[in-house]
Image 1: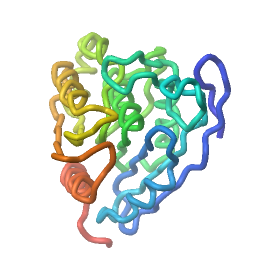
Image 2: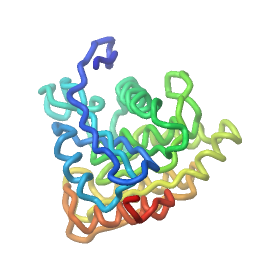
Image 3: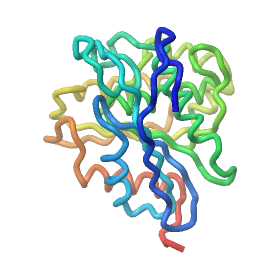
Length: 249
């Protein structure tokens, strides 16, 4: 599948991996990998979670030049130079990825709850989608087409943080959507790639912009990777927040 990427360049998405629900299908979540990774490794990890009612969709980002690597090409959801809330935002790239994710979710059954999660850069793209959903449109003005019920960001940061509050305060509908959307941020205190301060500031920006259900989970000694304890907490948070069945029936 191809997409129109930044600066009008058409970029090919890699393979999308799908983990089918082992029980009754109650939720579908798109999970976005980090910089230079692909959907395969996360699909295996998510398949092992005790969440039989979730369908996971794990796409692979297009390969593109990345400023953080001096223009060296790798899989990336958008261009990035500085992995922090203060970095330059590739708004076109962020919008393109958010549109791709919304498109992946748009054909799911109407009775199924929808969510987006991700790691590192994938978490940043997921949080951008959360902002687009609440605002009702992408940054470019196009309407956001789906309803989100959960957003998860592991070891990530909030892009476009400086303009978020103005966007949310532009309408009562945006504030209502923001106030009702559960968001889980998980971050290690020893993260050397996306420092822990970014998690604190992202949570702060989200809360002051009207996102009332922001839960920041902290892991002492955790670097820029995930651990079973963190994924167990993700599973518990999703199960409780989405009201999922415990059974495989």
